[in-house]
Image 1 (cartoon, rainbow over the protein chains, first blue to last red):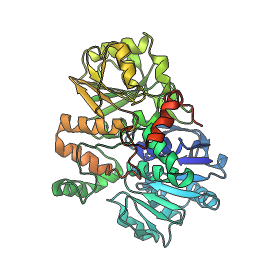
Image 2 (cartoon, rainbow over the protein chains, first blue to last red):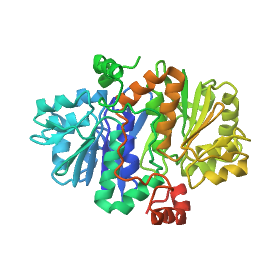
Image 3 (cartoon, rainbow over the protein chains, first blue to last red):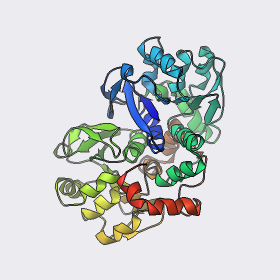
Image 4 (cartoon, one colour):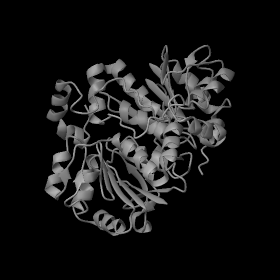
Length: 215
Length: 215
C-alpha cells in the first residue's frame, strides 16, 4: 500500500509528519514523500527541511495521498503540475486526504466540489469559493475524501484511517506504539474551547497564523 | 532563544517534529536541527529524511535541547561526540529535554543520574541501568530536565514548556494555532488504557516496536 505525502515550499511540518508517523505504521505501508522535484523542501518558517524522495511524475498510483497545509498553500492554488498530478492519481486512490489548509489545494484542484470538508478553523470558510461545503468536525469524511482540521488534526485523521483500513486492533496498536494518549496542558485547541481573548488575538492575526509569520 | 533539535540515524520522525512545531511557535524562537554532520538524516524506517542544518560543533549554546528517540537510539548509547556535546551544552541550557527513548541517550550521557525521568513505556525500566528513576507521568519534570513518554508525548511536553517559558496565554495561542484539540478514535494510548491483548502483543514484540521493524 503506497502512501504519498505531498511536500511544497513553506508547508507546515507537523501537518505532514503526523500522518506520516501514523499511516507508516500500517502493515505493508510504503510511504513516499513527493514534491514537484526531488530534494529538500523547506517548511513555513524555513528552519526545517524534509527531503522529497520522489518527483510527482515518479509516483503514479498511490493508494493514499496526503496534502499538508501551511503558508505555502497559497502558492499551490493555481492550476499546474501539482493539481494535474492530484487529479490524475485521485482516479485510483483509495483515500485522498488533506490536513489543515491542504484542503484548499485539493479544492482548488477541483476535487472537493459539492463535498463536505474542513480546514484550519481560520481558513475553513475559504473552502466555499472552491465549491466545497465547510464542515465543523475535526476529521471530515465524504466518500473517499478525508480532510482534517488544523495542523495536529492529521494525527487523528490518520489513526482513524489505520482503523478503517486494517481494523481497530491495528489502530489501537499504532496508538499504543506511539503512546498517543494526549494530555495537553490547556483545553484551548478549538475556537469553541479557547479563551475568547485568545480566539480574538488569532483572528486579528489570521493572516500571520495562516501565512506563517511568527512574532 | 535557540532550540536545538538533535537528529541521528533511525530517529522517529514525530518525536522530533512534534516539539519542533510547538516550540518553534514561541516568540523569538530560533530552532535548529543538529546532528553529528550536516545533511539529511534518515528516520527509523528509512522513508523520511530531515535535513540537519548544523553540525554539533556549530551549535554551542542552545537554550533548549530536544533529544528524540527511535530505534537509532541504541547506536547513541556509547560515549562519543553526541554525549560530549550534550554534556557541554547542558551546562548552559535552560531546559534539557527528550522524547521517547531519547531519555536513554540523555541518561547514558550521565545527565539523568538520580533524577526522575520517563521514556517509551516499553523502555522506561531501562532508565535504571543509567542511574535514573523511572516515573509514570506522560511528561516528567526534574529540575531543568524534562522527559516525555513515547513518540507523541513530545507535543504535550513542548506545549507545557511554551507555557512555562512565555505564559499560559502564549501556550493557549500555540494550542489554538495548531488546533491541538485531540480526538483520537480509540482510548488505547497507554498500557493502562489499551485492551490487554494489544498490550500483550506489543510487549511480545517490544524489540520490534523499539527497534522499528514494522510488519
